[in-house]
Length: 84
Image 1 (cartoon, rainbow, N blue to C red):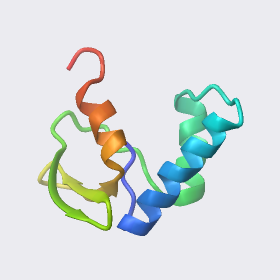
Image 2 (cartoon, rainbow, N blue to C red):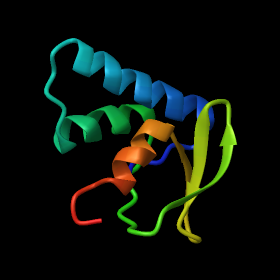
Image 3 (cartoon, rainbow, N blue to C red):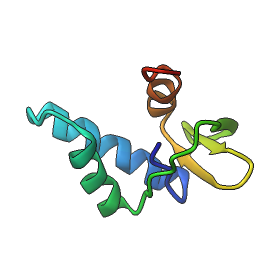
């Protein structure tokens, strides 16, 4: 899951993903990674991420080692990913 450094950046990342999809871009991991890199939101490959706070419409998420911010919609996609 991509985690951002603040709620504002997480919102910008989510907005950029939606704008790309709205422009007809078929989103995949490579495209999402490029958008995340522009926003400074690294990918955190943890199977144990849980929300711990909600600020400005965004979730603070941690696995106990790393903490970041993401749109609730991204967290929903994370918990509903195949194989989970």
